[in-house]
Length: 125
Ligand SMILES: [Zn+2]
Image (tube, rainbow, N blue to C red; front, side, top):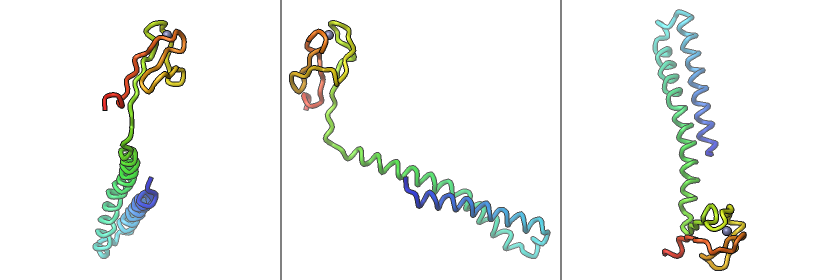
């Protein structure tokens, strides 16, 4: 999570709310005709800040997510291994930890010692 843009986003929203408060203060005081420019400026600033604040926060969130995703995608040396959920012979549940490995792509059922079908991306490479 990128903290700084996130905090900037929150500050933008808070400043926007504050600007809106000013806008209503001028409106309530009744002299917005004399302070017309200030009145318009506070409204424009409020609208801009409140509409861009969440955008900045969303960007901060999305970019940090993208950065972590890119980091995962950088890892190129994966190998995919598929093991059956259960033994076709005795029906016991097979887990990666319980397998009895007899080779890189060869394993036996820990219950009945039947050779299980193991698929590895390495064997297709
Ligand atoms: Zn078995």
